[in-house]
Amino acid sequence: MCGIVGYLGKRDALPVLMQGLKQLEYRGYDSSGIGIIYRKKIKVIKEKGKLVNLERKLSDNLSAKIGVAHTRWATHGGVTTENAHPHSGPEEKVIVVHNGIIDNYSRLKENLGKEGNSFLSETDSEVVAHLTEKYLDSGPEIAVSKALSQLKGTYGLLFLFRDHPDLIIAARNGSPLVIGIGKEEMFVASDAMAFAGYTQHAVFINDGEMVILSQNDYRIVNQQNLVIERDVEELEIERSNHSKNEFQHYLLKEIFEQPESVFRAIGRGGRLLPDFGTALLSGLNLEKRDFFDIKKIHIIAMGTAMYAGELGKFIMENLTRIPVEVSDASELCGINPIVDKNTLFFAVSQSGETRDTLAAVQEIQQKGGRVLGIVNTVGSTLARMTDGGVYIHAGSEISVASTKAFTNQVTILTLLALMIGRTRDISLSRGREIVSQLMSLPEKMEEILQRAEDLNVMAEFLKDYKSVLFLGRGINYPVAKEAALKLKEVSYIHAEAYSSGSLKHGPLALISEDMPSVFICTRGDSQEKIISHIQEVRARNGKVFVISNFDDDNLRDLADELFLVPQSDELLSPLLTIIPCQLLSYYTALKLGRDIDQPRNLAKSVTVD
Ligand code: AGP
Image (cartoon, rainbow, N blue to C red; front, side, top):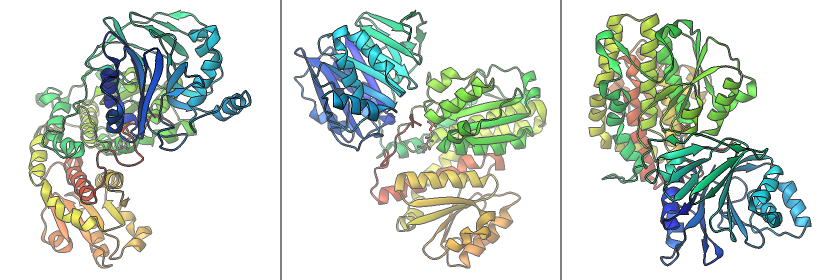
């Protein structure tokens, strides 16, 4: 789960590679490194920790026209400078950066050890450099092919050779790889974002392919050594906006961006058709009449995207009356998913690079299923591999904890529900109601954000607990799950979500003055029930914080703290109630002095199994 980038061309390679790494840091931030050819030798600079540590180590008088770089999320071997990439062969004739996992590395390492090689790191990747160097007498291309033929596992690999200062070789199996073609310069990376701002011309590499790059040319070959011709694609990728503006953290900035990003999700109104009470999403590659054939919808995703999917289930079942299943993508492949022609699959992902989601999509497509993507990152692997889909237009999300992508995913799932629902079930007037509620969301979100700092009071309480329960019923239950994930992720406080109805079936035993509960309680059929669940917690000395959209004396009396959001249609209430939950996590983490934008052990995108 790492980011790799390579450059060769007319520019100074170091700033280009550093820029690439900044764009790829979402893939891991345990360590980073750069390898260049400098004065006819390979020079490697690497450092553990954030990219800024590497940046400090780079001296100004270094310059090169070719180099490879890596940002790491540790899998094999601890977080040390030795384990940082690039890794070098024994005689430093070749260096390698690797994204993926070499499953058979121990056996290869053992064999190389018997031949006299000794290793400097605990990584699986170092063996690739050693193997390649072993065969280097046959020339770089053959050496790489021979090394690759012995590898089992997943890789996106870049090779740099001391004695070939105009050559980078790249190879792919199971980890993404894309070439960027510039004028008298070439880029290669795990993600086109790495060369955003330099070139928009890209060629995507497939599994089993190797690319031989020089400053003015590239050649793709497959395992049979046949040359592959592939079209150059024009990508509309913008560099991530790395400015925090007036905000202390990206997380807070992104929470505050939600009114604007939800407005973009509804196409600034253009994706809504108020007169017809429906939505219009192009890119689905479906005709309206295809909607009649849908007997089931199946949403697959991970983490926050999966909780967005759970809300999608609630909203879609309500508006379309089509049964919806939501699956944790990492579980799906293992259970041999049922795929049939009347099931429409949606894969939801911010990054479009989540390995588990991609693997599940591959399995479903392999069985003949139709999968549509709900994706934020333009040109990502998921966006390219699905049979159609919708961009959520949240803009670049840098904080590891996902916020604005979540609200945009839920918004898009609502538009889809409306579009399908209007052909099958709901009336024009109900459709118009939903459209007008969607239009009013940004303003309501703004209203909440103006009172953001009020959440500091709840955060001041929460910061001193070891564990917190988040409770909700019906549509509020997935909100509770997402809220619990957010708190865990950024504050490192243990948090668990339950449906409030399930409290008496076990979790109530946890309630005491040491275990606070945050209830998400909105107006609707179950509001009385939730109030009685709150009473049960209070009766057992549990502290109760409530996020609600109705002001009720009873609720005010029961809650230690109450935060109100504006009223809305029940189906859209999660898009408002989640905002105080996100802010609560942020302020709690802030008080605890956590590394809010890059929490320990995590990466923005999980690109390994
Ligand atoms: C959210 O805060 C998490 N960082 C994580 O659960 C994330 O949503 C999950 O890994 C899925 O990522 P994706 O949307 O990029 O596929």
